[in-house]
Length: 496
Image (cartoon, rainbow, N blue to C red):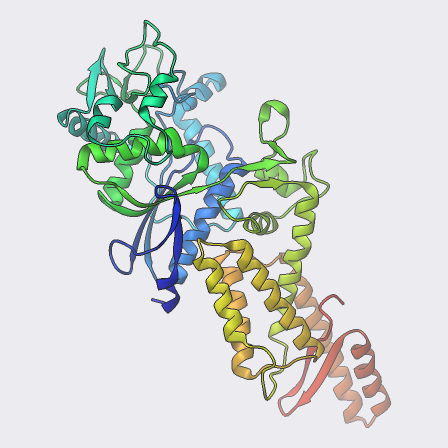
């Protein structure tokens, strides 16, 4: 375990403040993140949420924690709205396309995995599906019924929020009061099965046309969306675990309902830290297919869209997202992404320079303090924009080292390079651009040829040619250095 681990602070959505992170079991972290409902292509707003928690996952591992990261796939039970009405989103897609619901699930689960792989996001430790845990969900319903916090109506089972609120507090995560919610709710429609509008479905009886259905003691039907996450998180992480994450839009009612269900069953709060990633806008407006203000990851990467002037690589898009804090609203725009691309390449150029820099006999920069500032940023609720600012500072050191303006000892030079690479590639999970690697390979081959030609000239006493090669390369920003092991080169100007 790295010593920096003890300084990690997380913003807890439940307490509305930052708190020192201490896992329930020393050295181990249990983390659950609400995954996608796989009825359509994953959009960039979803991607931002999952990349935010990829950063959390990566940094916790970097600190030395053993992390069990569970992220579910919702493949049934998610209705069109949050009032337990409407059609199942996956079943509706299947009906519209005249295919089986599980064909829809398979298609968009594969799409989701492919997009996450393009972003170089780590897969979770466990990726359970809602349909794979029907038995566990039925058992939870039995427990909630036995505890007196649910009721059966016409083959459906509903959570009794008013009854629960007599013993516990419903609304503690979102800060809503049940009395206010009831006062602001219209009269129930006569055909409603619920006692109160705030009650939510644990099990829904399937209508005759409903394709996705399972047998239960109450009816042939399907589980409620909120119940699925409680069942899967409890099975793989226990009745209490460390971190539960998701998008800000899930705070109410989804996560509020999860808390109520877990407390109804186990009488304890299920999660230490609730974390919520904020939304993504496009050109200052909410992303929406209906308005055309919408772009899919594949359209962004290929450039096949009407909103961007160029294709944006997954690494640059990811880097751009991390330049805003995960709890802040982030606006996607062409100008911002193009500017971010320049910054991304500036960092990658610095990384390619570091291995060709010769160490000095003293250090002009306090590398240890700079390294600590990188940890300080991430320990402050995963503050990636501050981290990136520090990484640019590290790149600045490398550029001035290459220019010969400052120098570092061998030890500090190694610490600078390893820290920069570790945060860029291991923590942020960025990938160097392919063209950058190719350019470096081409440069090395060309330099090997020039160094061989210069050596031949020197061996033949043709010092004029030898010196000309050296001087012309220096003018181009490439410095040759002769040593006992041969001649090496370094780039003096990273933009040349």
